[in-house]
Image (cartoon, rainbow over all chains, first blue to last red; front, side):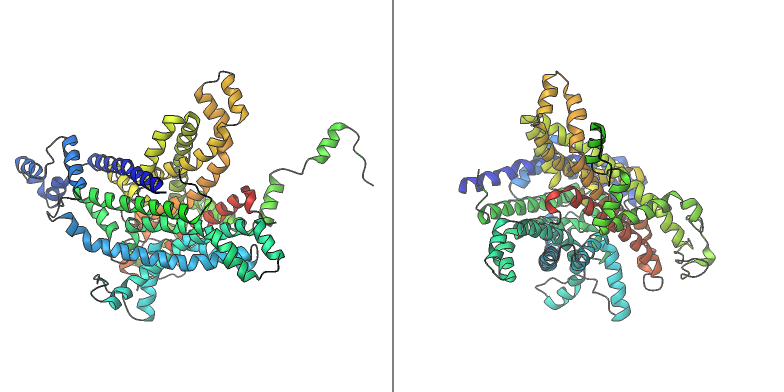
Length: 318
Length: 299
């Protein structure tokens, strides 16, 4: 087991290196750089080329690509993300609060998704091909179909009309004022959680359907066990693994993938920061963000794999 | 009494199940009512897109500053936007953009995904290993982040948005296709083709690719809805299709949010159109998968 864990952990490194190379090159292919983005924006076409060259030199943009890359890698190895090319502040500072926001939103949304998916999926499976099954499937597929930004607009509109209340526009961290924080984040969490519950519900339904056809379920039924007991003791245990996998993997993506939801609810999360970073050609910040999101994803992936091997005795460690 | 079949041909003909497109469609509707609803929504959308010039009440680009932000009524059934453009016409024309981007992105994603997936499985060994590691790298990016990065490089506009949406689809498609192709590779007919001295390209394209079409088709259908959603997200962020082209996500941007309280129709109807379209494709794709995956059939 220990060997398996170590092997899987080491496999993360080449993937991360690949991510680093890819985002590094992608960003350099984007036309323009941070100096142009800054000075061209405000009628700065008249800025002298010399000054811009000087700025580039200060940021290390005049160095050859391989040198820029190795400098960055050397920093990463020491967990030093460097400073933002746009603001000049340490990237750790830039990201800290936004990471807290995005992580909390991802956790809340995944919790809502799980709470919706498991009971609904089981219900749909037991009542396969009845109106209950259809209703659950329509509900979940509708969730998948509605863009979360539209759902967000409708929610905000609804609150405005019914309660004459708007969610606060400035983010309050959980540790400052938990009540205000939750009042603000519960709405985007609901919009996102409902949407992501759909995949979980479908997975729960099909996993449950598959398990319910197994021989040991028939045996349990033949023994005259209650349906409830069969479901909770025999079926759920075997069907829940893929569902938890799907929800965990989605959880990993929610950290950086909620660009549009953040925009609607006016939240300054990692997604919006990514859009800003690209628009400003802030290489260092954008690279750090992508590495953060990718690392998070790979680690969640790794934990899911290990949990799988640990929970399901049929899986052997290789 | 029915006549007893006399010839061998007649016997085999009688033993064959009644096939044909009509019977298949009938079965699908009866056994999968939800899938049929999805198919109906898709058909309506395609019809709207195809006949937009004839059925849209007005030009989607025509501005009427006298009728800015007017509420739904006899003149403008779904109201007008901040430039006085007819919302209904823009929603109808928007189906063109959505279909174009959805089909384009799915097609490109499926073609490249299939080629990479089958190729990776066919060559196996070191090639497979390298391809899989590269795919892993792409998997570590959230879909929208990857799409945004491509848009940043290529710029906005319909064509670039199609490429941006197809990019994250390629590795997803490749993974699914590779899994099926690994099984196909072990089939005797692939060995036979190799023994007959056919080239790699011919074996991949003529012998293996046709046999992984089912999962590919399911994948592509499922991705159509996803692509439409992604296009509307990019357009909503202002990084997708650009004004004045009629696109649903674009209609939800800017003024639609600003005036959401006083002119809710501006935000409501395009969002409804997106939801319905994606809903249709998802319902259809789901039923298609259920129908093709025998393990999930009702007993």
